View 1 (cartoon, rainbow, N blue to C red):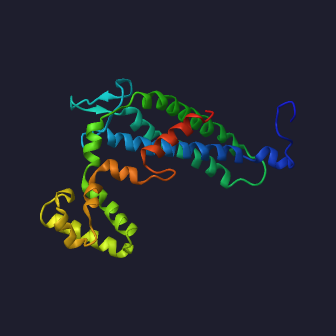
View 2: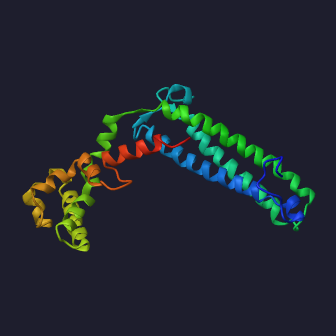
Length: 245
């Protein structure tokens, strides 16, 4: 064990030859890793869609559509999302091999190699592509700002403003709900409602409330650790840049 730089010897000889927990734990970790890559892939696929158009990936990581000449497919994201199920399958394969084994070695355990090696190769391949792919991303700030500027997204900010000014949340929620209903009934955006009209549903409203509909103000309000305020975002960026990986 010392020559192989192991932490120690196995204290049970049957466990030494028949335990595959290390492989199951490795496949579990790889499955979790792939799950997160898949979720990120799903976001990027939507961000690149014509409905959103918020980001664009480099040509090296995309292909054109065989039918629609204007379409740019985020292939690496789609393939990563698909390969996640493959890694999950490898985990289930090894669990299924082990579930019927007595507490000693049987030939069935020769089936442990293929799922482990395949999952490792698959995860390494996806990770090797993701770093340069993310580095190639270009952000369409104007489209993102336009999407974030819908004042309906800031209705919660008005409710929170009321709570900070002494209104119980259940009442604040009800009053802002009435304001939203008024806007829909009159086909208005929330930022098109005058202060006088706002006071009909929200009597406590002041001129300060009219500034709540700006996305940059909404983001800045979440000035807590892990929040969306620019100061907090910069803090997180600096923290992760200092990590040893």
